[in-house]
Amino acid sequence: MQPSKETLGWMYRTMVTSRRFEEVIEKIYLEGKTPVFNMANGPIPGEMHLSNGQEPVAVGVCAHLKPEDVVTATHRPHHQAIAKGVDLNRMAAEIFGKATGLSGGRGGHMHLFDADVNFACSGIIAQGMGPAAGAALSRKLQGKPGVAVAFIGEGAANQGAFHEAMNLAAVWKLPMICVIEDNAWGISVAKGTATAVKRNDVRAAAYGIPGHYIEGNDPWKIYEVAGEAIARARAGDGPTLIEVDTYRLAGHFMGDAEGYRPKGEKDGLFAKDPIPAMRKRLEAEGVFSAAELDALEADAAAAVDAAIRYARESADPRPEDALTAVFA
Image 1 (spheres, helix red, strand yellow):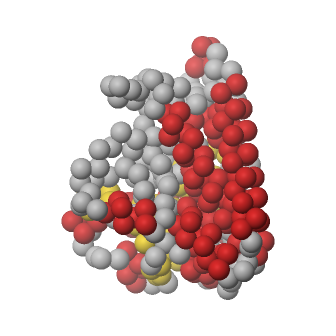
Image 2 (cartoon, rainbow, N blue to C red):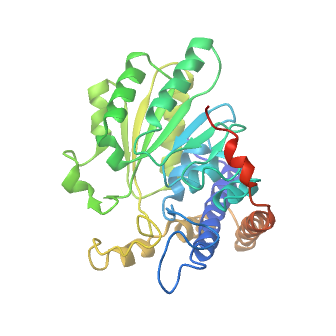
């Protein structure tokens, strides 16, 4: 299964959009936080987790999804939200804590919810596994179309919620796919020091389902494997477990000194940045000309700039809004 030129164009533009969005957010996030870093200051207070470097995982999977399909993501969600079609303007406004945000500014960047495209994320490790299994079960019981995809990090595969959800998904043959983004670091803990198995795809055998491991952060290979898994789920053949070898080019969070990384590791990661690598291959294989790729990049930049402008100009929530959308 190979992506069409149209799909490849969407994948590349979406990856560039995500990267551009995070580069702009990174600069704005630091406003008011220097010379002494205080995450409470500036127009974007709180923590910020960037997904730059992991963009291929989002586009390779979401290229196969439809609006009725459900995605649950992690505390590092921007690439997946953009790939699933979350409204970029309202997403930016939510991150800025504005009234026009997806949740009126209540959730921030780790709690993005867009019911229009069935996207949600959470700052709790492995939290999305249960909701994804529940969404898949509801579709099966109601005979409705749609699959559920749970994106998690490699560290989350050691959480009880992961095993419970995968076991039930297998027992009930739910239309669910679990995609593990293996960026090698659970905050500052190396995967090899916290996980008994080298690759989490082998855990699929415990549930009697297919398991796949994708090396090289390759968007073409991710697209191929995800397409097969999603088609299998749509056909009623049950869940699939996929682990992707990917990497984050930034720290765990903005302000992370990254002292835990071995010397030279980041230089090696930047040398294989997936976005310039994809552009180079698209040009080399004659899929797109340099001018066409420049145009896709310009479109992505314009969309991001418009979203940031929308967020900047949006009104802050009213004080009385703190009393709405709460359980009594």
